[in-house]
Image 1 (spheres, rainbow, N blue to C red):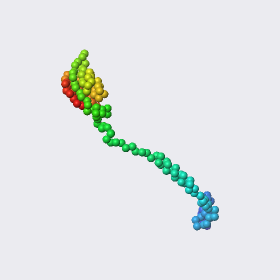
Image 2: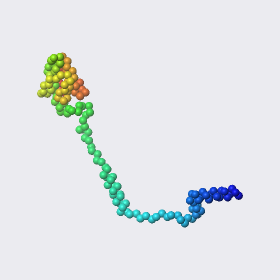
Image 3: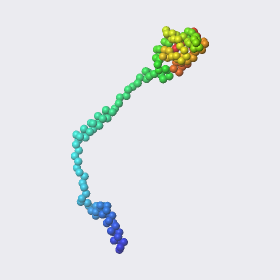
Image 4: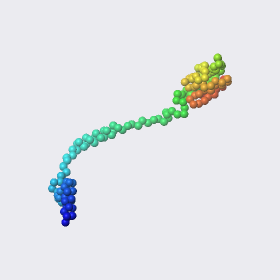
Length: 155
């Protein structure tokens, strides 16, 4: 009998601590249960919110600009020469001479004559890399051009 009384007391203590009452037990009707409040829906406000959402979505849409692939530059050609300039270039190594231990070359580029030493850049395209007795070595971007005396080169 002591066990039943202790067990009952423990159960009542647990229910009291948890906030349960005999009316709140399953299967028992509860009189003090809160009912869900009735909410009126304002259709105009919902439409206004939908319109604002649509405006935000359209304002973030970006336009894609189409690139003409025919106008894209060939990455393997130097960027500073147009094809028209490249077709018109005529190079002629006229003379090579030495002054005070320094070698010079006279190179005709189209109608201009350049007097150059090793390392000089001319026509914003070519660099004189080396001067030999009968030839010169030019750099055009990553292209190496060897030009001999009196040789005419269409570049």
